[in-house]
View (cartoon, helix red, strand yellow):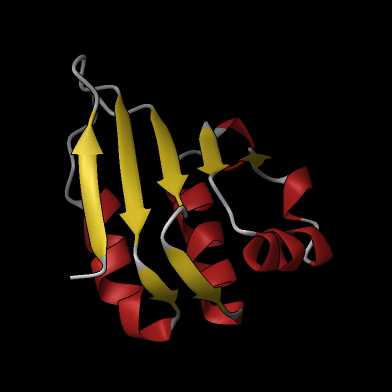
Length: 101
């Protein structure tokens, strides 16, 4: 499965790691990764260190996560992007909506 989750020791941060292609084929697994948690989670990390491809449906999924996590109050970091993925996020102005490292 290309999506793995890891909860922090205190249970407040959920890391979602995406391997390979982040596209529509991962839609349900991505939603399941964050929707079936408990309310203790108050921040999210999307780890793209092993993501090789990102398309417009992945951008939409990130926006759905943002809405789920509280919209403008959401605490979401996108981390470890390769240069191609980073460029797509930059062109899409996602730096305005997410903390990207």
